[in-house]
Each structure stands twice: as C-alpha cells, then as structure tokens.
Length: 259
Image (tube, rainbow, N blue to C red; front, side, top):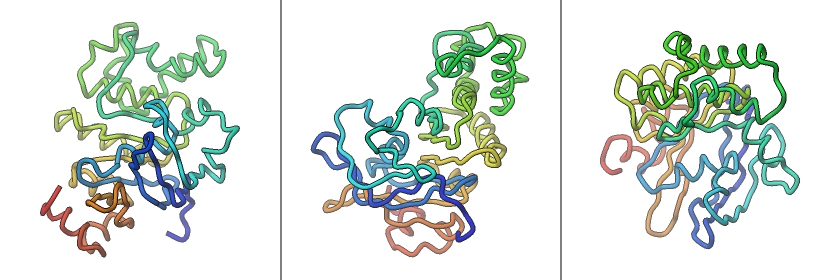
C-alpha cells in the first residue's frame, strides 16, 4: 500500500442524520486507480458511508459530520467547498437505474450542459466517448434520440454510468449498482469496472461477496452491534480480507454465518 496514493482520505469520521448516529469513527484511504469494495450486513452503514464521500447525504435531510474527508488534500466539509463541483469530481451511480425521461443523448449531455457552454460538436464527442467508456455505444448509437426509458435495466444502469463519466470525474461511487440487474447485465458492469480502473478511482458498495472478490483491489467490512453503530471492522487488500481476515466478525460474515 505504501506506493499507492489516496484519492480520498477519511479521518475519524462520525456521521449523524439529525441526532441519530449512522457512522462511528471510520478512518480509511480510498486509493487512486483502485477499486475499493464496501461490504457488510444490511443496516451497517455501507450506503450512508459512501454518500458521505461526495456530500450527497445532505440531500436526505439535516446531518452532522465529525472528522474529516479529504479529496486529494482538500477537506470536502470545509465551509467554502463548491458542492456542485465536488459532485462532478466525485460522481455517483445508485442502486436503481435512474435515467432522466429524456433522450439517451440528452441524459449523457445533461451534466455538461449544466457545467458550461459546449458546441454541438464538442457535446457529440463527449457523449460518444462516455458511451464508449460505459460499453454502451454500439448498442445505442443508432437511437440516441430515443427515450432512455426504453432501454433495458442493464442498459439504463450503464447509461447512468456514462452520464457520470461524461463530466470527467476523478472518483466514481457506486451503491449496489448491480442489485437490480440480471447476471448478464451484472457481468457487463463488472467488466466495465475493470476497464475504467486505469482512468479513475472506484468505490463500490455491494452485498454480493463473489462480486466484491471479483472486482475489487481493497475491501472494507462494515458491521454493527447493539453497542456500536456503523463501524468499520476491518480494511485491507481484498485477497487478505477474503482469505485471511484478522477479525472473527469478518470471517463469520464472509463465511455466511451471519448477514
């Protein structure tokens, strides 16, 4: 790990929705150009944690944050942070595909239209590049003006990935992106993760142990018990976490004894 550069450094973060604690004193480095999987049982804070990393959690109501999250050295919770710019640099793909009810082309171009003025030629190039990166171009290039809602679930999810990629993020957060997909669509998304790894940093929440072991370089195991909420039990190289976990709770979860 010593030669890896953290894209995001989480330092002793605790997080509250209102007065309810959801995450307790988590510290972790999300390494640049690596895939980090966040695993753990339902209710352990996985999705909450990943939403902390680009402040999208604040859209869900009043929150309180203790500790720091640094994105290439900048504390993202500092008072003068431009949240819209932050969310372009740290993109997010959600559990359920959420394309806008507009054309495939306009879905991908949406973020660029908000971010600045681009010519039609520039937008065309950005849309094609993003769809190529999301392994969707060949399937949709002849129907870019058709509604995105006409795509299959797997295609819609890759479109949402393309939409996130179009604004050239440095980090892509994914919250169980394959949970609503069939095995073939899941395989395409997993192949996509491997192809994107040279371009950006990825953190993925998944409930699927096999998926975590297939796609990630590092794994963080979150859990909860009666006395502690939203704690990170163990973090390390995926091979070590799955083959030689240090904490018995990690071993029990990965072996299927609970969760």
